[in-house]
Every structure is written in C-alpha cells, then in structure tokens.
Image 1 (tube, one colour):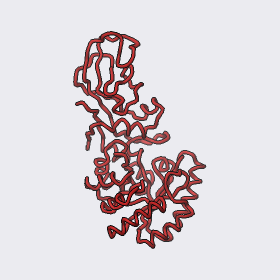
Image 2 (cartoon, helix red, strand yellow):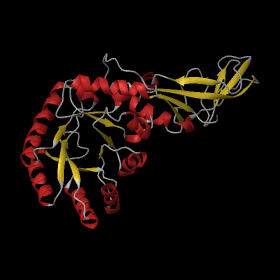
Image 3 (tube, one colour):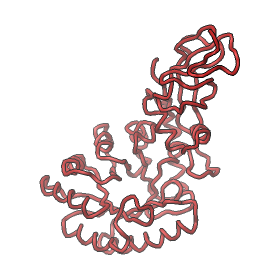
Image 4 (cartoon, one colour):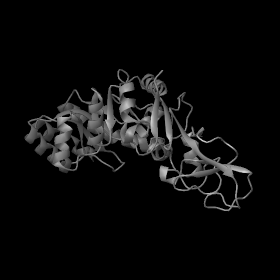
Amino acid sequence: MQSLLAEIDLPAIQFNANHFKKLSSRPLIAVVKDDAYGHGAEEVALSLHGVAASFAVATVEEGASLRLAGVTEDILVFTPPMTEEECVRLLLYRLTASVTSLSALHLLLRAAERTGTAPRVHLAVNTGMNRYGVESGAAARTARLLKKRGCDVVGVYSHYFAAEKDGEREAQNVLFKSAVSAVKEIFPHCISHIAATGGALKGEKGDAVRVGLGLYGYLPFGGSEPLVRAMKLYAFVSNRCRQTGRGLGYALAERDFQTVHTLRLGYGDGFFREGLSPAVGKLCMDAAIVGGDVPFGKKILVVSDFEAYARAHGTSVYEALVRLSGKAVKTYHRT
C-alpha cells in the first residue's frame, strides 16, 4: 500500500464515551469535528449511536456528511455559516446552528425566510475565550430576538479557555451561569454546556458535557483517567538496499548501516521533517530512511502514542492527531 494506514479501534472510542458519561452523569455531546480528530467522523458517529445524545462539528459541510452517512441525532455546528447559501444548507440538512453574533443571526434568518424553516439553534456566549459568542450581558436580549423571529433556542454554551486553572474557570462560570439563567427564562427547555474534556475532568457539568479529545483516548492536561487510545498509524516498506555512500535521505549519516530500508511516509503526510524514530536523517517529502534489513511491503507501526509524538515536536496532541491521519487510509476494528 502506498498510503499510510490508520487502524482505528471503535470499541475503544465507545469505552471512552461511556467513561465520560459515567464521570459526569450527564448526556454526552460527542465532538467529531475535523474528521473526528482524524479518526473518521462518519464511522465514529455511527459507532456512538445510543451512546452520544448528539454530535458537534465545525462546519456545515461536516454536518451534511454525517447526515448523508445516516446519523439521525442532533448535530450542532460550531462555526457560524458565512453565506446565506451555507445557512440554507444547514437548515435543509436539519443541522443546529450556533448563534455567535447578530451578523451571523441575520444571515440565518434570511435563509429561514427562503426555506420556510424555523431554525433550531444553540446560543454561544463569550465568557473569555474571545473566539465566538455574544457577550454574557447580551444573552437575554439575543434570546428575546430569537424567539420573536421564530427560532427555537435548544441550547446555550460556552468554552473554557484554560479549564485547568481554577480561578479562570470559575470566572467564566460566573458569566456563563448568568447568561444561562437569562436564556432559560425565555427558553426553559434549552440545555447548557460549557464542559469540554478538560471541564468534565474538573467536575464541571451543566446539563450536558461536550467531549472531544477524551473520546479518542487523550487528555488535554494530563491525568490518570482509564482511557483507551483509539488510533495506530502504520507505514509500509517501499524499498530496501545496501547503503551506498554516506547519505541517508537529505542528510549525512552519523553512522554506516550495511542495509537500509525506506518507509513510504514523509513530511508531505504531515510528519515533521526531523525526529521520527526509527528514521534516520531528515524525512523526504514522501519517504523516510531507516537502518536495517526489512522486507519490501512489510507493515511497520510508526505512531501509537500521538501525545509522545506531539511532545517530541513541541506541539499538541490535537495537532498531531489531525496532521498525521489526514492522508491515511482508515480501517476500523468494530468488536
């Protein structure tokens, strides 16, 4: 196989999801944005039927793909649609919009008029991340406008920017609880959620927990939760030869090998150019050179601990998962 191979353990993801449900005793909103952090959004979402109460994605396109795959649960789109056409698509695929600003709301309302649809929305509140959301003090005013224009606010949410810092988390809680109280006076049935994986680990709940990274077996700031890592990444040996001269890839070899082999992976697949054990020298765009005699075509495990890989390269496990799995062919273990 010329492509990288990602083997993904769906029972591991189910185990992790159930762990967070038990930990929080709240319904689970499973975050499957960016192709489920590289694990394959459609397969992951379908495997969590009956476990997750609903799903969350980044874009309308991602939500539409889940619907076409047969996902029937509610799907929340975090990013506000940027055009009226995207809003129309969101409504036609029965997705739930995030109202993040009045500008985004006006686009959604125009699309609602075109389609004759009453939008289901979650109101996003800016409690300090400053990414999306209306100000806490404007939540009631925005909720009244939404009700006047025929929208059903089924949720209100925010996001901790530093869930591991108790003081910052509590300051955000104060703003969020004020907004939730105001919105629930107008839409009593709406659910509140602010705890992503980090918040859930700190015991924050709301009416639901919204877990992303933890589903896939990793934690945002350490801990000892009994999670199972769901992805292993393999490459294939695409060549073997006797070493000629002193080069190994784009570098002078620090030692001589009698025989070397080539793995079909490189920085074109999202790897950083240096520091992939057991490769030596610098990675090529599509190849990595390794000392030793390994048969042509053999499957080699290259990454099973994405956290360790991220730490070695000064980045986050979020980035490592998405970068390295992006071009991989995905296969799934279902039992």
